Image (cartoon, rainbow, N blue to C red; front, top):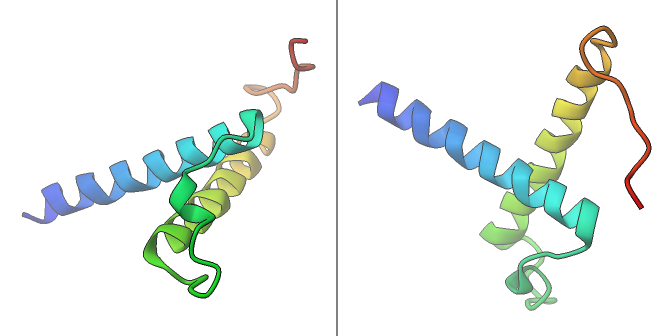
Length: 76
C-alpha cells in the first residue's frame, strides 16, 4: 500500500515537472490554469506551481554535476 502510494506521488511530481518544462519551452499551458482569476489557489494552479518548483529543483541538481550535464544552445 505504501509502495503504491509512493509510486503515484512520484508519478504526479514527474508529470507536473513535465508540464512545467513544456510551458517553459513552448509557452503552452493548461487552459484551466488561467480561468479562475478570483480563485488563484485552486488545486490545479497549486499543482502547476509545484511542478515549476520541482522543475527548478531538478535543474539545480543537474547543474551541480557539470561532469555529467552541460548546457547547449537551443536549436533554432
